[in-house]
Length: 263
Length: 350
Image 1 (cartoon, rainbow over the protein chains, first blue to last red):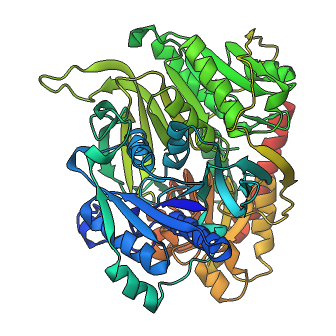
Image 2: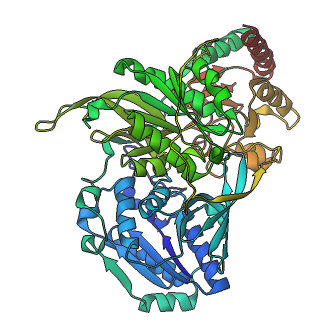
Image 3: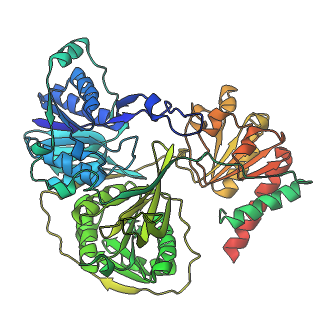
């Protein structure tokens, strides 16, 4: 069985957020990590490898320094690593990112593709389903559990919804998006780190992408355009009143809540 | 086809088990706002099996027109037949805007459909406006009018971005539940109903649902709560949380608390809001007897409306509260509970 896991290097927004004195986000000071949902997806793939002897290929798109997360994935036990990096791919929105990754995956053999549900920098949850769409694959999002029946070429997934879950079966090849809650990812092993240093990371550029037109890549190929971006304005002070009686306080609150349609 | 030929604001009217999800009504409310400056109609797209009975409810909440895709293949949500249904509606009727709820369904359906019809999709929007792109004229670049401007938080809520989709149609957004306002329903309102079936032929992309398991949890996750009544050390005792629980019940909300309360052993850790607890973004957050240490504020400042009650007029919580009341919580909270109940009874009757 061949499994491809798509991973992303992201700034650590949980807890590690740093601000400049003027209140803007200090990106340079933030650590980068392997996106948590992706790491859970990698762990799920490695568990399938432990059980059935799968070959696990990790793939990322990003700047050359994104090779760091591939090294980490190799040290955890992935077999092969591919870095898709090229200046013309920069500034991609989810459409252009998914066409790029799909273009890379078309060069590979696979039974199962696992992506994280969403990355903690963009939080969109769009790239996984969009890759599946470009490749014409069945997609199962929000996986809480992934089981494989190799003989029947079927995957069974516990798919989370807001108030329920479904047990869903799909024919392989297919794409599954993983939730961080799926598992507790393993640490890199000493042997794994040693092997990872020796392992070679394959680097692909624009020319290596299969069946993708230039008009669907990078900033130019992104249908969505940023009109304005700003570091969040910290919430300002609202009103403060000192009512003479509890009755007055209550009527003030009820009045405001009605004004805001909050009741 | 020219971009101007795409017309109308469309809403994916999510239903589950033949019940309209609240997000669908919220989106209809917003769609009406957007349709006004565009001088166009609001169309709800209703997809499911035996769902035609839901049409009138969509009309009452603002749909001028409902396109119904009804087929036995659409009984429970599955990506493929639903994406085929919505993408076929888009290809047939050419809307300029399509709004989808950012639910566990919509965040799967939206990206699949947007990729299929080859347009952009902006995720988890918290604000939608009609305006110009670029926002201000730039020499040498055409400024397009009447564009959908989609605003969303990113980087874990540390930044916000406004995004447009100027060169592709439809302009698509998923919208965070609980943010947009539904309209007061118009009793007896009727919509034009169009039945549309693009045909459903199962292929490799159709998955099989083996089992549907509905969640049976009686503890509400405070991260999912729309209204939170949060108490701090100022509440005084674990017993006195009763008055907060009564208020939460009257509001249809949930009780949460500050770290001081957890440290004191008054409440369990899973109710804690803050940097070392949970980050919450309810529509309404009451901070009662909470001083407002930075570590608490970090976990709740994204709330839409913050009401603070504290006897210390210098409490830092007043720096983030929309409405701050300096006073005695023991006197105000029970009276507030009674007033909320009265207000709700009045609304139910009217």
